[in-house]
Image: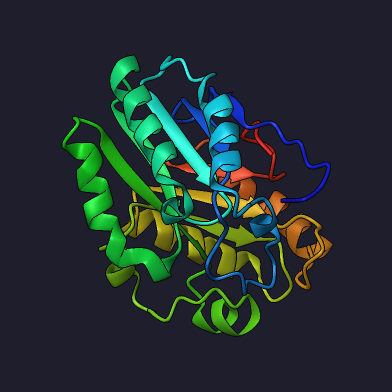
Length: 238
């Protein structure tokens, strides 16, 4: 856990698929090789301390929209058992009928049973993958995502939603649109994250971001199946 890091861990998304969102803490992403992401620093091996942070964040959930998104520095498998049990209890007690979680591709075989554990309670569980791009060369040799599958149809067998990363060197208007259109074809929802500066080697490209804002953003800004985060705190957490 980063010393002095005290992020907002609960928020309400009111536009495009309204839902509540919590940013929880687990024991950390098991991949940790992505060259653009320092998100894994928001983690700890102290299970009880994590649970206390998560319990506080979850205490703000009201069930106002009947839908909850859970994000954390990795995958749902990185959250402790007490936190998962508490999430289920809150969903049942507040009438939350749909929940979103994140997962790295390396844990894809855990998705089916995890989703079923919620669906037995009458809660639809959807899983989001941080895919970043369908361009295999860029994804694996530049971003180092650790996703060895090239076929989006195969990836969609495990995941319902995806994150895309845009605004980096090597991308163009055409490749960004292709990624978005491919995502919308195979997945229920797509979230486009515009690259922001952090301590990792991959940096934002101002020219690519400007091209996105001029020629890509206007096409998709009102698409209800597409979230666009121009800043990584646009959902209100972080």
